[in-house]
Picture 1 (cartoon, rainbow, N blue to C red):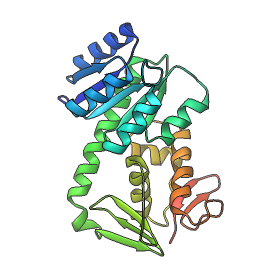
Picture 2 (tube, one colour):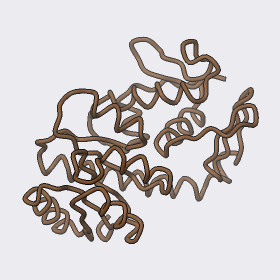
Picture 3 (cartoon, helix red, strand yellow):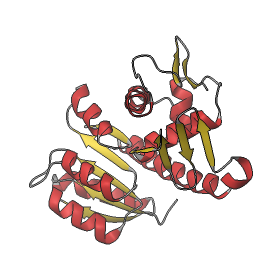
Picture 4 (tube, rainbow, N blue to C red):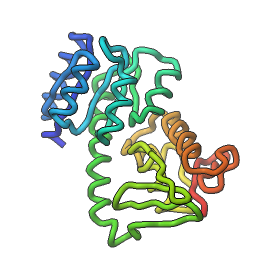
Length: 235
């Protein structure tokens, strides 16, 4: 995992130095930015493997940075928020962030999240390389069509814009259709966590995925909740 390039966007210079130092000790190449405009410039020029993005930034806040970057790249984004409330977390996920952490956080947890997210990216690359052998490149379920090779989803011939993590979640459930997975299992299999994380992440992604692919999100046909257990894809 060492050698991956991490962009850390944080206007608190002390915290920025601490994160940079500890990531460097783990063997990562670290680039930094201290405001939103600089973050966009560095992300575009350095093409990092992962971005740790603070929300409260000068010039352009983290939400806007996330929104812009999601239109341009699929790089995993870990949002850093100083607020414990749900609003910042949910908004960040809705804009396409892959995960979030609430300050203050332990350095061990931060490094574990980084490793998990990067490991998941590598797993997806390996899976993509063998998809032709294990899964049809395109699967159709009713009006829904998923193209695994092109990472494209459409319904009734209209392309649906999904964030990278929404696509990963849909692809995993579709490939394992009719199987029920708990939220913790989905965190492990889709997000790459090997420990119990915040299951709110799964719920938010599932809610927005339903709004995008289901004809009636309030009465889903494919992405079903199995009460007391978790979620499954049916169809």
